[in-house]
Length: 207
Image 1 (cartoon, rainbow, N blue to C red):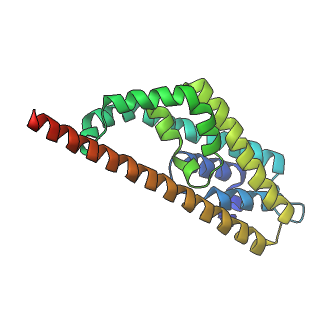
Image 2 (tube, rainbow, N blue to C red):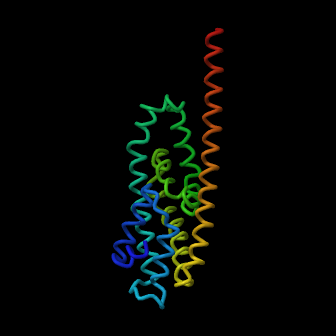
């Protein structure tokens, strides 16, 4: 990653952050700390830390809107067509829409600063038909915080890559933990829906 960003500079950083935000699992913990370290005074690179943060945030925003657009245009159709196989229906879509209208701002904001989760948060926001203006605003805020924090970590640590690697491992583990919590919650949700459906079938058969 260091060689890639060193060779392609701001353009490479833009592409990598865009892809990561568009649900391609590229660890931004590494991308941003590397870009920040390359902007450090001791680096032979000509990157500027302010430009690194701005360009990375723009990449996150563009990639986020790509994923949001996929969720907005294809999410509803996918649920309506295939939702029955995972016990999802139109009522669940309506609940998702209501949720993102009411709490979408804080959900996207927090999701954007959680490792792993941040890569995929745009899809449900699109499927829930979150307002593009609200989505964009809170994506910029959350991504700006994330890019600034990691960029500055890399910038101030500079060539101390062993410390950067330790921080990356910690952030990655936090991301895996967050993803595990989400998976458990989804499993509980589908288990509850399965029991509810079985109960409804039994009641219909007895009636």
